[in-house]
Length: 314
Image (cartoon, rainbow, N blue to C red; front, side, top):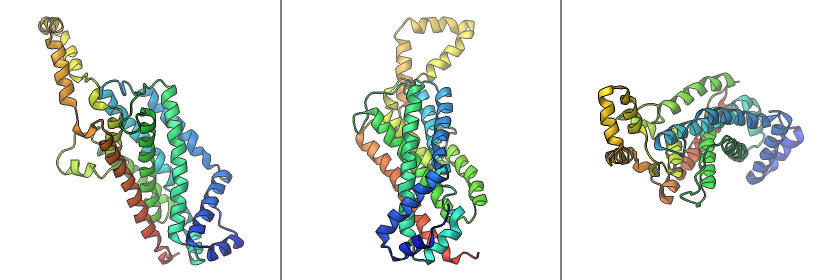
């Protein structure tokens, strides 16, 4: 990120806090254009395409939807992390100098938040297009707007933005790009382990999971995708595997000819229902609110840490 010219620094020194937001926002978009920041969009398309080609039965049955929600959330978190993990730390000397010249840290951070929101919005639109082109079946109804596409799009955006703000916070805390990039794998692993899908979490681990973006992202995707309204196939699949046993084959043939087979499917579906995935507007608003709250909290923490940039010993 190139530094301001002396004229721009002088303008910043005398600008009001609100005016500084637009000065820095303009600077960020000029850097986006001059330093090929648009590369984040094709990268988002590639990652989305890879995921779209391997997931199955998402929004078709419960099991496929939950696994698909994990994959979608991972794409969002990946995009968000790499949008901003180096955004601040690589420019600490410049930020320090401009802060001493009159820059308000809060103005700079708000400009970053607005800029990152635009990136996240672009990546969300790309995801929606890629998933649609790859044949992922979008339901029609959504719990809030009435449109699944709108509710799903808002959800993907909020997950991406929450991850973006978490990475921005880290970028404000660490003092080098090397440290920032070292932290990223640990953040990704934590999001995966505590997602609640990859591993069965209990006790303290389950409580910790509620502090992760992945847990809330998956929960929201399953909500807008009407997870509880879809059939479950886990028990059917388990029973079908037993048909290789000749003695069980007779029992299987009997089951499929009676109402017991239908009852087995209904019981399996009822057992797989999760109250957290309730297809209601109030539940969706709550989950969106949590993701927004995470974004604001990490942005505030990042701002507080960056306020002490003058104490850097370099």
